[in-house]
Image (cartoon, rainbow, N blue to C red):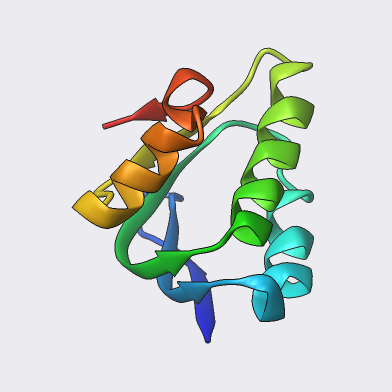
Amino acid sequence: MLDIREGSNHDLILTGRFDASQVEKARGVFLALTEGKTVDFTGLDYISSAGLGVLLAAQKRLSQRGQSLRLVNVNNHIRDVLRFSGFDQIFEIA
């Protein structure tokens, strides 16, 4: 299960598993963004290729507006997934 909530700094906080079963829920949130956001992965345990696809679609749409997603507090496993998929070249990861 994936939980997405807005933090006190208006960042998006992800908790749980971002997999194919959660794509529609996440797509609604990420594709509604009109400005760049920090996405906090502190509580995220897992991300699938379907989850990566949602992030990529949001990033592409935001980049057309000169905006972007910034990913923070990424655990080592998810950081490896992002690196192996080349997403570390697409997103700012702090």
